[in-house]
Every structure is written in C-alpha cells, then in structure tokens.
Amino acid sequence: MLDLTYDSPKPKVIAGAKHDWELVIGMEVHAQISSRAKLFSGASTRFGAEPNSNVSFVDAAMPGMLPVINEYCVEQAVRTGLGLKAQINLWSAFDRKNYFYPDQPAGYQISQLYHPLVGEGEILVDMEPGIARKVRIERIHVEQDAGKSIHDMDPAMSFVDLNRAGVALMEIVSRPDIRGPEEAAAYITKLRQILRYLGTCDGNMQNGNLRADVNVSVCRPGAYEKYMETQDFAHLGTRCEIKNMNSMRFIQLAIDHEAKRQIAILEGGGTVEQETRLYDPDKNETRSMRSKEEAHDYRYFPDPDLLPLEIEQGWVDDIRAALPELPDEKKARFVKDFGLSEYDASVLTAEHENAAYFEQVAAGNDGKLAANWVINELFGRLKKDDRDITDSPIAPENLGQIVGLIKSEEISGKIAKDVFEIAYTSGREPREIVETEGMKQVTDTGAIEAAVDEVIAANPAQVEKAKANPKLAGWFVGQVMKATGGKANPKAVNEIVQAKLGL
Amino acid sequence: MSIDTETAARVAKLARIKVEEDALPALAKEFSDILGFIEQLNEVDVEDVEPMTSVTPMRLKRRADEVTDGGQADKVLSGAPDAREGFFAVPKVVE
Figure 1 (cartoon, one colour):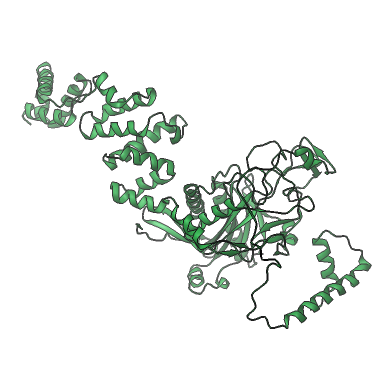
Figure 2 (tube, helix red, strand yellow):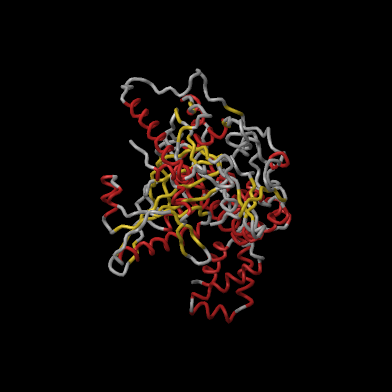
C-alpha cells in the first residue's frame, strides 16, 4: 500500500492563570448503519416516515417477541472494522444495557459490552498536508438505537416515535489520542469520510445518523507522554463526557469551553468530578446531566434471547477482498500517479464521488491540469449553483475534452473558460463548441504577425513609448488578443510583439 | 458477600419496582443468599471447561436485510395508555 509520510501535530495548549495545560480527548461515535431493515426486526429504517409506522412488535417490546439479527448489519460493521484496519472478532456476543426511558420500550438496549464484534484499529486524521494524527480505535460494537422523544408538541406531555428504535448503530470508541478541538473535528471528518467510502453509514449529522460523545480531560504538559509510555490513565486528568454532539462547530466550542471549565476548577484548588455533561449552544456552556448519575448503573448482562454471534474467517476475507479503495490510499495514489500536491489530492478525495469524477476527467489527460479544472472551475461553478457533483451538468468526459484542448494548445486557457460555460449550461460537446463557434486558438504565426503589424502601424506613439520602456509591450499583446477575440496564442503573440518592436 | 437494605432499595429503584420499607430486610437477605450460592459455585474449578452459551447445538439465527414488518402504527399504539397524532404520549421528560 502507498503511504504518505507525515508528522504529528502539536497538541493544543491552553494557558491557564497559573500555567499551561494540554487537552486529552477520546470519542465515542454513534454511526447509524446503512441498511434497509432494523438490527433485530424487519421494520424499515427509512427516515422521515409517519410516526410509529416503521415499528415491529419487536421494536415496541411486546411481550414474547424475540430479536433475530440482520446479517447485513453485521456485514456492514465488519466492513467498517476492516476499513479501520481493525481486529475482527469471530466470536462476539450481545448484552443488555438496562435503563428506563420512554423512547426505550424494552427497558434495555441490546449492545455489546463484554465481547464486541470489532477490536483495535486506527484512523489517520489529516490536519494539513504532511501533518496527521494517528488515533487508535479501541473497539466497535453493534447496538440498537432508541426511539425519538419530542418535547415541544404539548406543554405537559412528551411524544414518542419509535421509528428509530431498533435501528442498527455502530459505536466506534477511540483511545484518548485526540489533542485539541480542531483535531476532534478532523477526526469526525475523517471517520465520516471513511464510512461514506465504505457505504456503511451515510454520515448525515443533521439527521443524527452520526453523533459523538466527547470525553475531555486536561493535563500538564509532559503528562500525556507518560500516559503513552505506560498506558496508565493515572497520568491523565479526570474526564467529563459531553453527550450527543452532532455538529462539528459545536463539538469544537464544547471542548474548548469544557477544558477551560476544568482548568479553572483545578487552578482554584478543586477537583474535577467525573460526570456526564450536556452542551448548550445558546449559552456556549456545558452543564451537568444529574439524572444520568444514578442511571450509570446499567447492570449489563448477556442477552439470554441471543446466542453468541459467530462468524467465519472466510466470510470476513470475502468482505475484505471487496473493500473499495479508501481515502488514504486514494490520496497517495493521486499524488503519485497524477503528480498532484497533497492538498489537491485531499480536496479531490474528500468524497469518493469527487474522486471518481476527477479520474474520468484525468483519463488520458494531464493530471495536474485536470485537477485545476475540477477544483477551481467545476467545484466553484457547482457551489455557485448549490449543486452536487453527482448531478453536474457537465459530464466528466466533456470536461476532459476541454482539458485536452488546452493541453494541445487548440484553445487558450481564457477561451477554455468560455467553452466551459457553454458546455456547462448547454450540455454541448466542447469539441463541437470550439468548431461551431470558431473558438480555436490561432497558432498560425502568419496570422498573428499580420495582427501585430496592424496594431503597431495604428499606434506609432505607443511604439515609441514601448521602445523606451519595454514593460509597455504588454499593451500590444493585449491589443492583439482583443483584435483576435482572445483566440491568439498569448505566448506566440508575446514573442512576435517583442521581435517586431525590437525589444 | 452480604447485601444491606440500602443496596436492596437501590436495586429496586433501578428496576422501577416498588418495595415497601418493611419488605427490604427480607429482600436483602434473599439477595445475600443468592450471592452466597454463587460464591459457592465459584469454588468449582472450571479451568479447562469451555463456557456453555446454549443448551442446544444451535447457531445464532439470522435474517436478510429486507423490510418485512411495520405499517401498523394503530396496533403498536393500541395498548398505550395515551396516544396522540400517531405518537405515544407520556408525561413530560426533558433534560
């Protein structure tokens, strides 16, 4: 596999009133598994359906109903594990996590505490070209989602919709290897990118399909290195868990606020209590979720309704063999094969649809030029129209034609922009546009010479000035370009102007 | 290991089971007896014995990823003490 070399970023340092502090962050990301049916029932996972219409008696926890596992959800979790270079456990088991809440009709969530399906893996979190943080993954387990409570439809009542109850989730647990708010956001971005490449989660944060619990603690500089050496948590500070974050911006604000809160407590001689907190975006602060304190005793035990989940190595191997090319490999390949900068390669591989489009444009073309056109012209134009690459009005083959026409000097870069605009709005083929509209670049030296002669003859005063000050030759180039409707090859014009003026 | 009445009361609360104050000592004793029995089982040497996860030689049953259920909101809600506009209606719970 190709690998780009990188250095680790510096941890974020917050200056307290007394001394400096560093942040230590671990994340538990809940990612909804992309599947048609729920984890243990045949009800649909479709978002936005009528309330309680996607509910089976299993999801509603009717007495006597038994869960039957959706094999595809297991496959998706295995695929995710493989994508994160993780250990796949051929033997795993489900446990009950007991707590009472109206959106959880069984009184327990089926999860995997003792024997998760996926073990240790890693994610390389890109910060900027050449700088990345390797974040260790501790485990991924498969579990059920809860239903949804709506609190604003009635002053005295909460309304419960169980459509989401029982939908399959992956809980992806990281080690405390994230060292600042920006890294936390970059971690989510990278994880989301990998999940989307794999097709195991759509990554839609707005719908809550990807949400994070963020564990934050602070320590003095040097303490984290001791933790890494010994893996002894005693070197780290007490952590607080900020629950249920589904916005990159709020995750960063919440971490920053929470770290400062803890620093103020510690510098004031107090101790940080390990607790669950909620972030309030309106006030930009976190507050304690006291109700969670007692509920923390989940009294886990193996679910007697479910036998252990045993999978075959051969099945895992088949899933591995069918894995798509993942972002890190694709980026490295783009750098190597197309000669792109790491930055451009990152932009093009952010979404696999973008990468696929680019590869079609670049096929048989100059890779760098193709990258410039996709990133600067196409992405800019799509953004202006608020369109997605998947419904780009210009087909990749056609953009590839434009890039080819520039490279072969049949059209100038400037004319190419006009061709692009016509092709984008009309769907016409660039070659045909250039022919029909007579936009071919004039590379015929004779024709250019004639145009230059004409401009020189018409402007004797300018000629004198230019002879005194060679910088003014550019004016002639401009005039010739204008006279030829931008079709003259600017390089050729420049050379001929210089020669004719005797510069 | 012995369970006191305070622990018994806590377990009852976590399980949302109402237990009168005067019933707690008996409950605590029952818990203690059960744990005592488990402790006794713990004395058995099971060093080379594979854990038995099922009494039948069965593999976990699996289903295909197909939508085969749902579309029965009326039935799902029929046992609810209160339901409105397709939702279960419960006393306000909000953080």
